[in-house]
Length: 233
Image 1: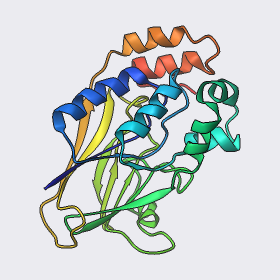
Image 2: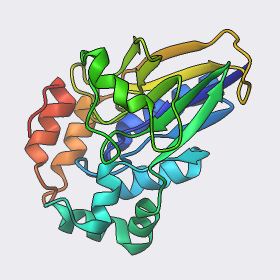
Image 3: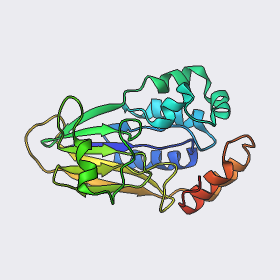
């Protein structure tokens, strides 16, 4: 049985990322998938970008990753200087989606934006339905991120799963990621485990570090979010 961890939305929060790294060392997964948004919002984007490149075997881009290059975000100057051109180009070339076949379920894996709108755990089956199909095929499940809120849903179409956020969780300000266990690359139906992992980290320490970055855009909003889990933008 394969153990695969999918994680997303690190958003420059290296304190949370290092807490996740310790949990990965304990779990010893066979693969780690990055599902978008290594950067943006937090203070240490170069470090979280490099961490993703070092520790994740598969990579998918998110709206913040692409926005660093195409300038669709209005807060790029700080991030441009911190990331440098080579990292920005790497982020921009990331694929928008991948497939994960495990225990007879073929999952469509993508961040959220810009592929679809943000998906929430309380969305209706009708809202989720269209996300199970892309231009090529229909899937038995979707795994996404972007909303910063983990969920595991069963719909008439199949399984709808959100990894949650490592560095910028909304609701409760812990780090979250998804553990999938099953028979990878097998079309035969077999037991499948979908587990939402909750990893506490030192939020106060991250807030203190953030205060040192005077030019970080919307710094106060980021600090409030990592301390309270309340969206503040």
